[in-house]
Amino acid sequence: MKLIWYGHACFELRSSAGSVVFDPYRPGSVPGLSLPELNADVVICSHGHSDHNCSEAVKLSGREPEFKVTQIPVFHDDQCGKLRGKNLCSIVEADGLRVAHLGDLGHPLSGDELSRFGRLDLLMIPVGGVYTIDAVQAKELIDALKPRIAVPMHYRCASSGIRSIAPVEDFLRLWPAEDVRLLHSSEYDMESRENAKIIVFSI
Image 1 (tube, rainbow, N blue to C red):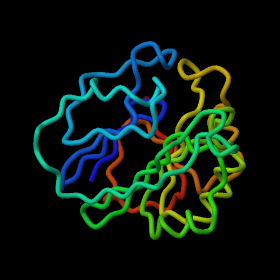
Image 2 (image 1 turned 90 degrees about the vertical axis):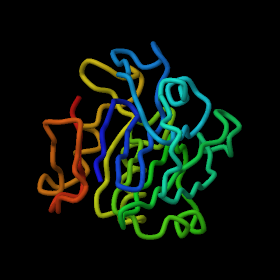
Image 3 (image 1 turned 30 degrees about the horizontal axis):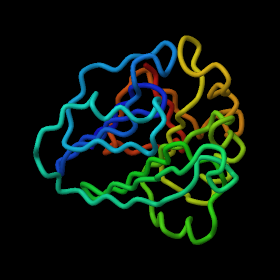
């Protein structure tokens, strides 16, 4: 299984059971970023905002994937959606692995919501704050869900990203250095065994 990051909250997951793109963004919606041509079996958008909802950017294969998808309805803010509406967290099970993408989660999860995630091999989690949970809340959620690996997303980079949200360094400072691995790539082979708990992509 391979995970590829295209910036912001957009990832592609490739497995023997099929492929899925999460949260492709519309042209101009994320400063400094543009999507390449994408092909997948399925596209999943966590909510309707332009920086997460450009399903037409993904050319669908027409194949029926063999992986299982579970979605957990949550909110984009901490006021039950009154500010920014609803959001979907998605869990994909393929090749014996469970991978979750939290979209623009905007609040701490309840005990019942936490229990629905179960065991996780990899968790894609927003950390930039303002429109989502912030670095401290993301750390608390990772500690609660206990994924084997967590991948931060939805943060400001040096040359791209939404200016009002925080950089990933705010999140990384909450972890011991030995728990963090900085990749020199936008791709990650999930079959590799990591000592690190936090994987940070580069684009």
